[in-house]
Amino acid sequence: MSADWQDFVTVDPNICHGQACVTGTRIPVSVVLDNLAAGVSEQEVLTSYPRLSHEAIHACSAYAADLARGADDGDDPVVAQTRAVRRELASRFGSDINALCDFLEKRERAHEERLVNYEPNRER
Image (tube, rainbow, N blue to C red; front, side):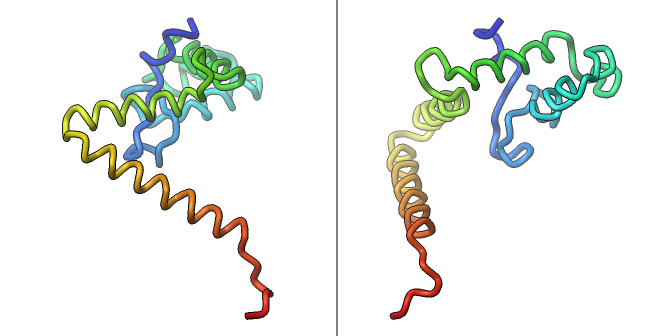
């Protein structure tokens, strides 16, 4: 089943702030997993979220399992999906999108480094 979670779990920056959600819904995978972890039965989850299916719930568990051990290629499943989205954007809009993504990633890393190295009380 772990290979099939991609049919049921998607990450879209425009839906739920990019959280992994059950495909075609705004139900975050984390909500499904939180319910199961709290002892809520699968049937109760289905009753509470009628847009879910048994397969979608199992896919959420498989997604979590892949996340816990790392995807088959050694990447976080979200990273793998992000790369797939990037390839799709590049095929639709040309290689310029790759340059834009690289630029944004470099800026984000630089920003994170500045935050890590920030010393508010440092004398200037």
